Image (cartoon, rainbow over all chains, first blue to last red; front, top):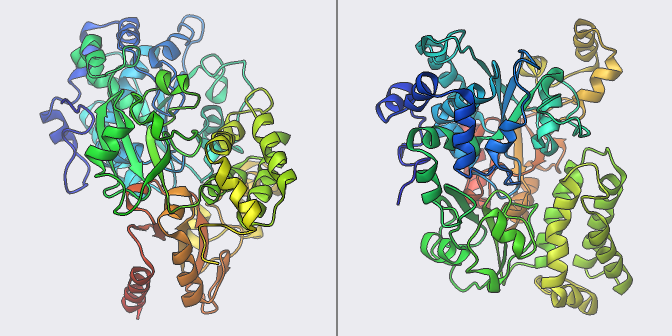
Length: 427
Length: 130
């Protein structure tokens, strides 16, 4: 099984330096693109590969690039921003790439920049990833030294400067348009669209935003071709491998590079060694805190954006959080929603007011201090906070675990009401 | 962030100085500064403990870690110990859920924690300083 993203990462967790990266074939894809391909051909290659955005939404990366206006209409500066904010609870995949394979991220960003004719790039990394800051800073310096960055990349007329931007910390800063505000030194609130970032992005100039894992796939697609990339996946419309993570009370929590379309059963049983001894699997959030619950009946669904959408929720980041039978589902949902309530930017009312209300209701239910009207109100909340009623995706994401959990764990919610306490806590 | 690196936090005076350089009003700048959770507008201890309270860490034992830290440091979240050594703060997911439960002490990451391991970490931290 091929593992293009992780096959060369070092066991000692140190980053791969430029020399080792080059020895393993690094920057060959960049040279190939610069000498043999036009920018449009690079975009088409990525489109043909079916590379979906790995930040959570699964939007086709090549299609996103094709929205950039031509240079004749919008001359430089033009930007590319790489999203390494990774604050989705339960997700820990971009960290691995930033810390251990920084040149793969940079080469991918260079290829994307060439494809969309950008001349300046930002790698936006969350504050907590101190190792990643060091790795990216060192790698950028190596690239300037070796001529992979600067006014003449690999001696050509293509010029590219790239900077590290360390976030000052806020979940919503990972929303692509909010991230642009953060880079500009403003409050990281999402921007109204249209206009889209491809036309009016950073400082009002055309900008493409891609997730770290998405961009790390690009060198491999350019080097090996779209057919090879599609062949890595078990889902027709979604190419490549995926960094799947699994956390919670499983025997060996971890992160594995597996074909897109791998099932939850395989990840749980073969890679994570099943649930911890004596515990039973009850459900899982497949792609971080903003995805909804999958139950035992979904264990054999091939995991991808199109397939998970078909069963009523989001694939998200593909980093799974498992719920066991000794953990209270109401408590788990409360902790998920509380995170989003704290991280709301406060811009729109359903999010600013609706999330704290959901937290108050969930807290009362969890303590056994609520009645059936409170539960009804909670249902009402979960249904009304949806993409149509909010400014960005934060609040609807916050409601995913609640909306699906209310249906899946109906009896558990009821037991809190009738027993006037949390059945998982000792009386 | 530069101010904070040197002083540990951003005081009103520092804020006004930076605002003048940026040609903004202090209120405008404060609106930006207080938006972000990693810029401190109050003094903090010599070390900042950031204990992850997101979902994977909650499932694997965050509550027990928090009670032990409260007991040992005699502070609640958002407070600084009387000797100025530690500030205890909650943080959202640290992106290391395969090593949950986890915390950061300044820039150092600690995973696979249990209450006794927290005691040992703080003991060795104090030994290093004495």
